[in-house]
Image 1: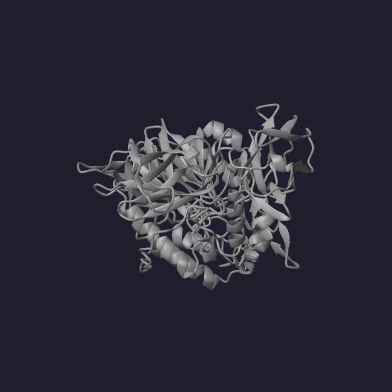
Image 2 (image 1 turned 60 degrees about the vertical axis):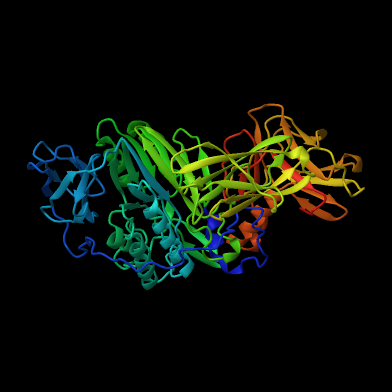
Amino acid sequence: MRSILVFCCLIIGLLLHSTINVSIGQDAASPQSGTEILDLLLTETPQPDYDAAVPTRISGRVLLHTPAEISGAEGISVTDGYSVVATDAEGAYTLKPNRHAVFIYITRPAGYDVQGSWYKPLAASVDFELKPALADEDEYIFVHVTDTHVSQNSRSLVGLSRFVREVNDLTPQPRFVVNSGDLLNLHKALLSTPAAGQADFRNYVGIMNHLAMPHYNVSGDHTDSSYRLDQFPRGDHRCGKPLYWEHLGPHFHSFEYGRIHFVSVDFGYHLGQRQLPVNGKQLEYPTNQVQPMHAEWMRQDMGHRSAGTFVVTTSEADLGEHCPDFAQIAAQGDIRLQLTGDIHVVSHKTRSVPYRTGGALAGCWWNPKAEQLCPDLSPQGYLIYRVKGEKLEQFYKGLGQRVAIVSHRVGAPLTGRVDLKAHLVQPRPNETLDYSLNGTDWMPMTQVDQPFYRTAYQATVDSTSLPDGLLIFRVRSSSGEIRTREFFVANDRDRSPIQAEALLSFSVGAESGWTTHKAPDSKVDVVFNGMVVGTLDPDARRDYSFMIPAASLRKANVLRFRFADPDDGMSLGSPVLTVQDTVIRDPRDVALRRVRTAHWGNAAVDWGGFITGNAAPPDESPFHRRQDVFCFVLDTTP
């Protein structure tokens, strides 16, 4: 599935030269601030001793320091990344390390902090120290960021610096940050030089070290480097990892906070088993499957978790696709959620083990034409979680944005009275939100809730008072930040200004390297402006065209699909309405196509399409979005 991104990353230099219409997406109307790059804060970290022999056995103690005494800490997990043991009543442990081991390390237990480093080089005797945590862990905040894609590109360094400042300024302050992969923007086939890898790691770590709280990381296939290939060549499961070890430590690890046992899983291995043709050359790309020794480590690690905890994993993508026997591991380990990244969209998928993708902090550093948008039109940003006992809730925050329009989606049709919603993050004293339907007249939004970190607002709009067609909805904070979104007023009133028939065309179940092809299982009616204009055949993947009489056209036209089976669904190419040789697309489709091409070049404009109905899978991806209603305006003047 990810072969598309392999190609994408090599054509970034062929990006589209058209301008993004930011009013269709979530714009960045307020000036950028915080454009300074933080000075690199580099600290000494435990380093692997590559030349030392692996000890036959490693023993030591985990000591607990309290104001009253120093004692042994019982039941603490100690690991070499391959097997896990627990300390006894005196805090002592003995472990026989794997011959491939690099570090010996511990799992932070809930309610305690590690004094010194939580990982250390291999030695015959290694001790660790704990102290009671100062803050209660029943309720807390943490941040999930992903796909930072840091490089020597100054925009990536400005963005990461801005992220660090924003997180540090949140009140109450998050307890930690997790990054679920693609920390850097190195070449997946290990073509970047070791010097480039070293520079990018220094940039990432040097900026992230300014965080006022710990950060835990997953490597991701853009973070593996060509450093020490002579010592760890392709075919060795450790290939590509040494720079990560030297800057961030073990690439499989866990820690506990409150009721949650977090496990970071890196499933990228350079085993020489996956050759892809790129520009006439065969290149070796990662084999994205957790290998047996690390799957066994996952089982042992989760088996040693503290009583009463459940598991949340952090990985580049859904482990259901990338870890053999994951369903069994999840059932045994009580895995309830996966925090993922990789695909640069914000989505949640219910599976036997649900996963939530966290957008992308990078958005598209490499091309300003993307206007700080991800390929699903989300702003570049990150997820903020609140944990209360076993309950998790979250919201996505755009980088540098405190104002967000949260409903409806871009290009959604508005009919009758509609509630439009927005929120303001960390509102200042007496700060409020206003809205405008014409860009001139502003009216106050109504405060409706105060979820964590935010004040939620609502505006009830009577769309019948507005002309049919495109509407630019604006939200403004009293401090001056403005966000816009394009909606589609469709009250079935105004006839088409063009007196000609039209051709509606689209494909069903079209080929894609990203989403499972899906034709409907039963009959589907094609409904255009409330009238059935044709039907789709069950189990048929094909192109369709339907003539729309001139009398049936409106200024604002709406396409829907009516499934005979309410649980049915399908994958759908971009619907097109052609009138007098003019091609008209849904406004959200237009925005998605523009942002896709800014990310991946002109070839990406026709990749993918939409997912319609209730079937699952297919899943959403950068190239397939869920959408059940499509709109076409025959008067293109907003």
